[in-house]
Amino acid sequence: MTSLTPAYGALTLYLVAGTLWLVSAARRKPPLATAARALAGVGVVIHAVSVALQWIADGHIPLVSLYELVSAGTLACVAGYRVFAWMHGDIPEAGASVAFASFVVMGLALQTPTEPSAMNEALKSYWLIVHVIFALAAYGGYTIAAALGTAYLVRARQGADRQEALAHRLILLGFVAHAVMVLSGAIWAHRAWGRYWAWDPIEIWSLGTWLVYALYLHLWSVHGWRGRRAAWFAALALPLIVACYWAVPLFSKSIHAYSKGLR
Image 1 (cartoon, rainbow, N blue to C red):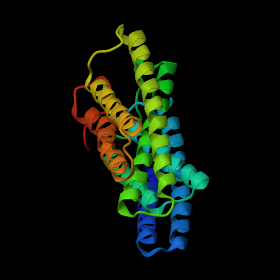
Image 2: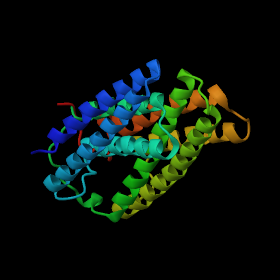
Image 3: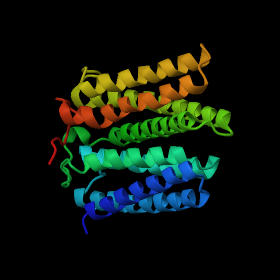
Image 4: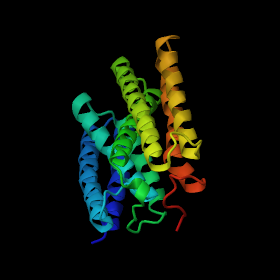
């Protein structure tokens, strides 16, 4: 069995789970949300199997090609939301947002080369693992915060203040992880290529998105942005993350674009 078989299985389960969450939110049917959580959990397990099979096929940690990075990112997002729902309670609108976003991004990634990847000398460093782990933490936090913002906008619900506070905490967590990601990437780049910063397209986009979230934190803490304004900001900032993580490596001339091209 190749890694693609469970990958498509997980993709299907994310779509079904997202649909059930959406119907649950629209019709106030808690049993559907329970089913959605269960299917998303099974999807996470199957997705993890896909990553493990890719690891075996590669012979190294599968964090090299665009497909591998997006696969790891979507796995982190869905798994992160399941943990969030377990700790803080499920919000069907947020679950649907995470599931559908993961379905779309992972579906697009499956249209890029999925063959086992080769690891060049620059990637043979423990800084790769540090850099990518903090990237996953940052983008996962931003994604779940955007889902909470979307849920806030779709329907004002009881406990919205707590939901808003959780979104803020997730963005703060993502912001710190994002800073570590950039710093570890700079150290890694210096060791690999003898320079900390090269104004590579990914470096520029990554710094730009970090500054966008810095603006969010400034508006929150200094200007008292709350409610719908903060929710809109969290939701609308997410496309920048998708562009940075998926579109820029695919369409730009970047040292991060290790595997490019649609099939």
